[in-house]
Length: 206
Image 1 (cartoon, rainbow, N blue to C red):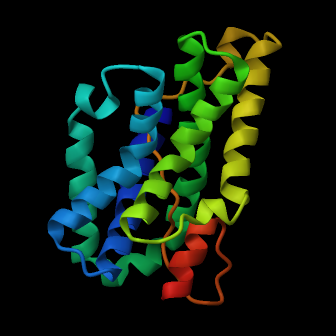
Image 2 (image 1 turned 120 degrees about the horizontal axis):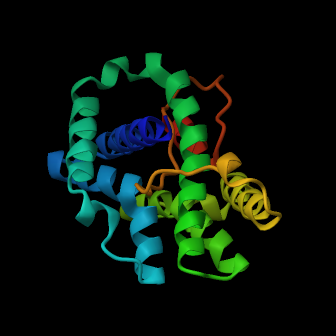
């Protein structure tokens, strides 16, 4: 089940990155690059910093094809994306939790300290969105809004605490290895209250 949610979150994050690229008049190559960076950038940065190889998309190149396919499909059907905003919000929330946990688990498997474990989870959860904003010549909104990073940090802390205090092994989460990052959600009308800092920018541009 977690594997299915993970792939769905990768698709959702790649699609929302494609919408951002489309508003900035990027060509198909730029759309695909931005989608891959947003969806896979957090896990890539985490693994690079921790020396955890091979990188997830190197071990499974299919993830690159999934990101590019989702991004191109989004551009082709951009006019219909507003109708899917609530499913995307759900995937956004689930994805942040799952991939933060995945980042924490990678660090724990490498024997890292608690602080590094939580930081690894946070990087997995938010770094892709930071890279996306930089590529779009924007100031990363995660630096001006604490909500998204705070949720990731709290999730990592709770997960580590659950394992530290010795909960039964069968009650622990075992998130899938694909590790992605994203800080964007679908745009919507101005009356829709955006959940995260990234959605705030996207909503403001519509």
